[in-house]
Image (cartoon, rainbow, N blue to C red; front, side, top):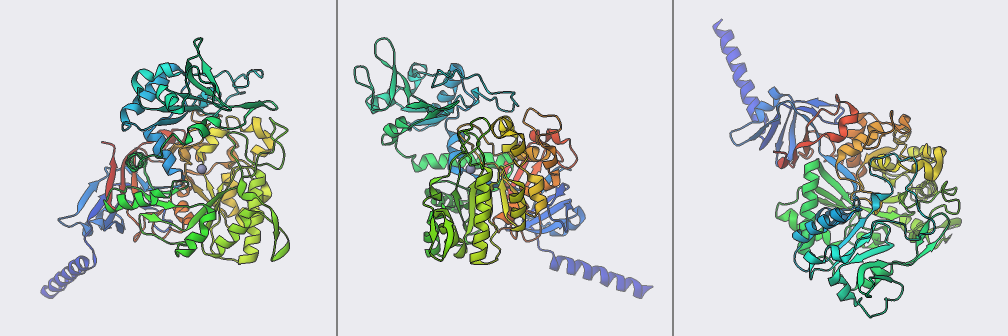
Length: 606
Ligand SMILES: [Zn+2]
């Protein structure tokens, strides 16, 4: 008896000793939560422990206790639902910051809201900074969130369309000497305030600048409205040249570094508030790499960036030794980007057959597709400039990401990828087909066979379905945003936002809108009942994976991000509702309670 007690005492002591010797003390613990980890080996947990920004434990409330020491910060989640931090595959970061901090008029088409928005930015901006952009009246034709039966009535005799038209007298009273140059969404019309007109030399008694029609009152005084030339084409009118932009381009200074940093903080603040902890930066000026460095060194970076230069810079990357895997936990490189066709928003995406609503157009190829010529090493091939660049970049260990929207654009890239594989050989290249918006059945299958990454933005579905069938018809629409078939084909479906959107649409950073779109295939107002092409819906578990682990994979970062797994970065999001058990129609309204990046709280709702 005595001996037994002694042995069990020893055993208990050794367990305690071993336990404390093996269990590292965490600097941060979150417990009492409902964790959906996106780790298939350990899908659910109650608690995590983190040390120096990385997870050292993912498991139970009991198990995490051994990692808590006197210095550990312990967060009680009170039963709330937690996912890995969201990884947005496609953010126009510079544009997002500018739109969030600056002027957004997409939903503005009346004087009161126009004045209020300009005044708001005027009060925020440093003195002397130009207020530009805006894109007013974008939603005057198609209300956001609606499935419309047909577009707004357009008078074919009115080349410029009968839209809201602001004038300088609405804002001159408070903008005073700050120049303002705002534009309508289609760039056919701009509006300059008094200060901007003065700088451009547009005034009473002076003839209109070449190629610009200046609206004037009965005394000859410019009202501020400036009209670009347009031509009457079939069914619609086309902007001929953006002469206003050309006239003002030398007058408007580039944003100051202070302005860029203010915009950057605004964008990161927004990301933290919606649970985005990593993003791929698509088109920012290279100066942002240095802004990231400065902010990282100051400890102010709250979302991790993967920066993508344009494809035609691949040689500079190779010269510097930059390839897949380059960078640290905060700022990474390794991919290049290119565009080969237009977008759905203005019917410039490239299709095999003409647009349904405009039989004279199949959309456009971007400049990078030209010239087409025969390849010296294979005279049978007609190669685009894109293809020559892509072959070399791929050979240098750089990841390719190429924008394709229309079915012919997607088809061209599948052809091109087959040739790249034939020439450069099989390897783990994770070709990112950016948008993959409208694909033929054959190309979906080829994409799966070649294990591509479909870099899609599911909210496009909710937005574009408003007019998709009118533009490309029912049959081609079947291949639009075909996430289910892409997923099942073997392609890796990765999600993101495409923030801030185009001059026709706003794409929000909020991942809940993307998850909602992928799971319900409805507009924001819940149409149509049952969803648009509902056979292409993903499950909510798949959609979460698309916005986390699959984007990490798409960026060669699945060993550091995308799931809550020991060894990975401690990036997670606490949500207001349990995505797995709630009504999918309500996912769009889910909010973020807390965002944690690297074991540090970067956003808290209260
Ligand atoms: Zn984009």
